[in-house]
Image (cartoon, rainbow, N blue to C red):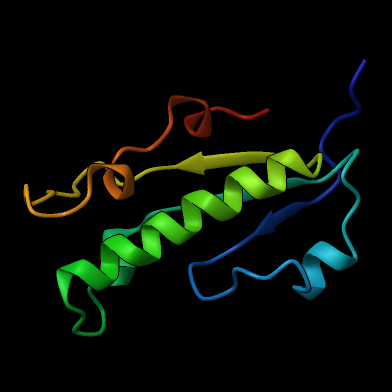
Length: 102
């Protein structure tokens, strides 16, 4: 049986590094990594819409990498992201398993 969550590790869009101190000090067996695409945060500073999509795509990729390394990840994709047809669909579609804790 899996142990309860030890710590919650929040990873933001500008912290996508496996050398992040919280991850280095974390315990894969007990800790939960939490990531979320927060449009309010993305819009605090003026960004081109393509940059926001690129940041979110990098976050989704990083979440998958963490899962592959054995971390439990809770990922919440943006509910308000409107995707122009000109953007690459692979950047826009959050894989279904990301929305769940594994």
